Length: 298
Ligand SMILES: Nc1nc2c(c(=O)[nH]1)N[C@H]1C(S)=C(S)[C@@H](COP(=O)(O)O)O[C@H]1N2
Ligand SMILES: [Mo]
Image (cartoon, rainbow, N blue to C red; front, side):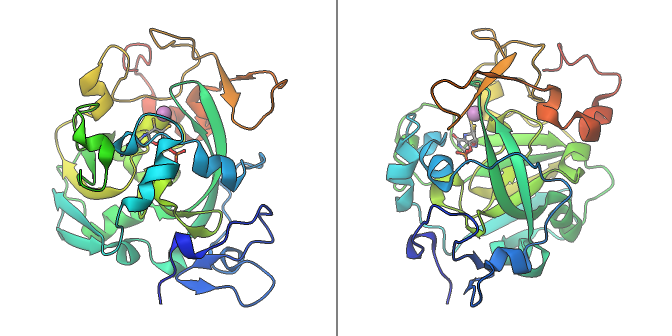
């Protein structure tokens, strides 16, 4: 039996939660993710936001533009069955099931900061697998240089898609070395449970050193290509949203500063935090951009 998000009663206490990984409920006191999802040296030691915050303050324009729309509406999205088409410059193109891409025994917990381009941030304990492991499974052909991603297009379940808010389906892209970087994951869970729909169930990209819009939700297609893909936000407003979208406090959004950020849940009197280059992951990723002018290639 496959347990769904809706079967689980959220509890406030992270460590005390019943947890689902690989479809089972933990039988012992330790949560299942602690037994099956490997802890990761890539995780931050910063305190994660609460499940309440992570699942009620979302950007998922397919369900509307308000932060609370996804929590209210994303339940309508049917995520089983689900297939991810992997195509383009790969040796083994095909339609893959989520469980084939993110094998239960390969799941890792990654506690990452998420920095939205709107200048708010959270800390989220994802469960997932390195994107590199998925691309290797498909077999990357020598000429491939970029990876393009697409979200589900299903207007009958995604009311935001009925309106031309964005050019649907939502698209994103990475350079191949960014896609293969060990920090880049495909997440299938958070807080040790299956991914809530509003967070991009059943499988979404997480690229923690880039603005949140790069972390495309509810992925149905991954294409290896030799051409730089155009992402949805970049196509809509290229002067505001670049292809790279690396978190950069030195390059302001044309309409607001990117120097600081508001940590969701920090409380009314907490000051804003200073935004870090590459969202604090510079030690790991800055070398990917050696020789590039990141003010120009924003
Ligand atoms: N398909 C899709 N993916 C998306 C978005 C979206 O509207 N549609 N919003 C992005 C933005 S702007 C952010 S900040 C993150 C938010 O992820 P979260 O709601 O899980 O915190 O998802 C990103 N992925
Ligand atoms: Mo965002």
